[in-house]
Length: 123
Length: 107
Image 1 (cartoon, one colour):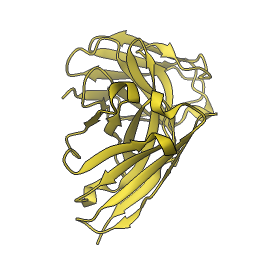
Image 2 (image 1 turned 30 degrees about the vertical axis):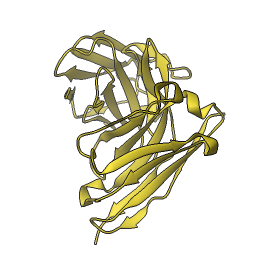
Image 3 (image 1 turned 90 degrees about the vertical axis):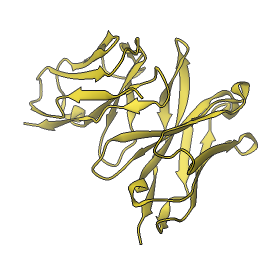
Image 4 (image 1 turned 60 degrees about the horizontal axis):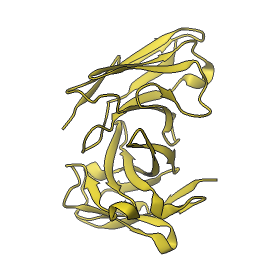
C-alpha cells in the first residue's frame, strides 16, 4: 500500500527556516517523481515544486513564488522527500502536501497524496 | 505561465442534480489536465487525469471532457459525498498550475 506521511510543520517567525519531510512507503521511491503542493487558509491549491526520479537525475522545478527560497531534495536510502523552506513569509502559511506522480501518456499526474503538515509563519 | 480559470467559483446544488464545472486555460494544453476533489481537512483526491480518464475507484458519475483550452468536469447525479471543492490542474508545462477551485455546496 502506498503511504506518504508528511512531518516537520510548525510555527516559525517571518524570515525563518523550516524543513518538511515526506516519508514514503509501499513503492520504489527512486522510480517516482514527487511533488509538493500547498493549501493556504481561504485560498486554493498551489503547486510548489517537483523532484524528478533517479532516472532523470533528481532534477527539480519550482513555482515562481518559492524559487530561490525553497529547495526540494530526497534521500532514497530513507525513502524520504524534503522541502527546505528559507526566508519564510506570512504568505507561506499553509498545509503542505507531498504527492507521488505516476505517468500516463508520458505525463506524470499526482495519484497519491499524504495527509499534509501545517506550516504557520507568524511573529 | 499558463493560467487556469474555473467557472463557476461556487455552485449550490441538490442531491441528484447534474453538475458541470468548466476549466479554461490561457493557452493550449492538449489533454494534459487533471481534476481533483478536496474536502475540508483532507488531502486532494485525483478524480480524472489526461482530461477524461477516470481514476480507478472513482464513481462513474464523474466524467471529464475537453482538450486544448476548454475542459469540463461533469457529475451526472450529485451525491451527498460529492459536496466539496473541485480543482483543475494543467500539466502541459512548468510551472504546473491549478485553477482557483469550484466549491459545490448543498442547496
